[in-house]
Length: 186
Image 1 (cartoon, rainbow, N blue to C red):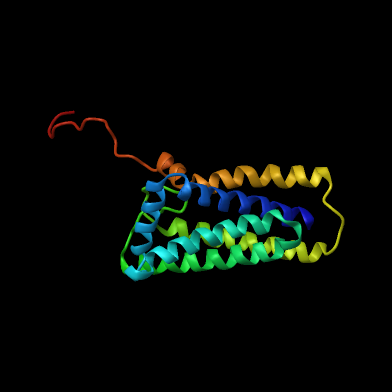
Image 2 (cartoon, helix red, strand yellow):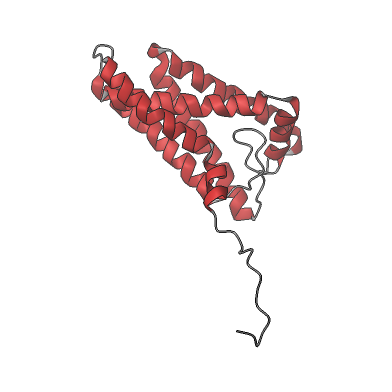
């Protein structure tokens, strides 16, 4: 079960690191994220503090997951934060709002059900990691093979999560560029 915990740690640390870096990479990127927070129903006076708190919580997840003794706290914080973000997305969707998903910075894809599914899946990964760590208990450090297996699965999965909107856009059906034939001709 140590591999499950380690895989969850790596996956979540990479996803949250990408989220923090994407938002803080440029001033315009952070300002875009702050502006998007208001579109989720956060009262105007709370937008800035909520946005800064969200980025701080994401950064805390990365730090907690990097330190072996704080991994359980990091997994719990990740699950809790993902739960809050999922509720915010679902509430916005119920209101008919479709703000841009600024989860990883300056993306402009509107939120949708896939973002709810993504966050719920990541929350489940955090909880599985917590369970894996509890079952493994005070077992020794993972073997090199376990580390390779966990990283070999977690790294590409993190890339898929971070680039999900781009992948959806890439594989989404596009209107045909084929000219239509005038009526009556064959």
